[in-house]
Image 1 (cartoon, rainbow, N blue to C red):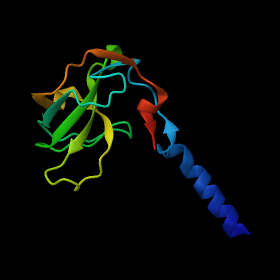
Image 2 (cartoon, helix red, strand yellow; image 1 turned 120 degrees about the vertical axis):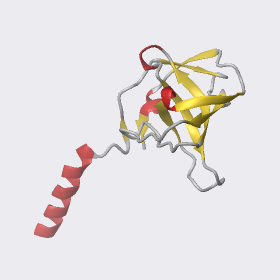
Image 3 (cartoon, one colour; image 1 turned 180 degrees about the vertical axis):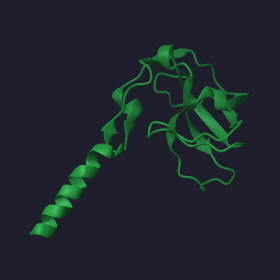
Length: 128
């Protein structure tokens, strides 16, 4: 019985520090996308430098990687974009959409205009 109590206490102490499965603060209230679902990439960008994320809302980026950009945050979050990293070998990295600073990439291929303004939801900043 003491072992089960110790295990339960240990798990309980770790929960508040874990970011997985919880709502994180919103970076912005609106974003610009190519369509209302933000399902089409706006552009392809290349990473100018490595970026190590501060929390689960962001994705890690290595210099030289290609990033498919799906949204550009507006207003207070206008320094961040949302996208997915494409590794040098397809399938080498699990596909994951996340945010990153626009300052660590350069636009290489415009694909569609970011002309649709969309409200962000809690799911845009949810850590799973």
